[in-house]
Length: 133
Image (cartoon, rainbow, N blue to C red):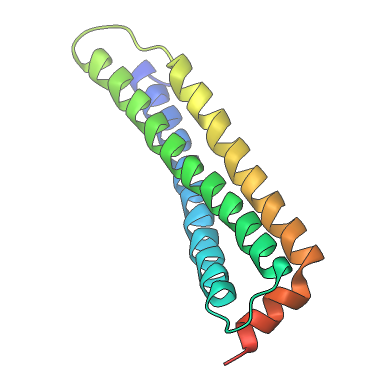
């Protein structure tokens, strides 16, 4: 059986790796979505659909930003538990870290779903915005 400290270390590494992977997804999508919004709103002639797409993509950016924040908060909760353990306390998986991890996954998923739906229904507007000089 592994030592308790080794188990705690592995659990923390797994949680941090998950948060890092979701950060990578969120940051990449934020960059792409902000780029698309910038192209949409910089056009000379804006239609109602351009505003709708920009707003919907903005909602996806907001979801991804929340995901980044919840990932950060999750790591903070784990650090607090590790500090408590290092000071001689017992280590238990912090309920806040579990909650923040759930919110991080939820907001990445919702943001990705919004992006895919927007891309599916407004692909013509997005393509024009991206290719127009």
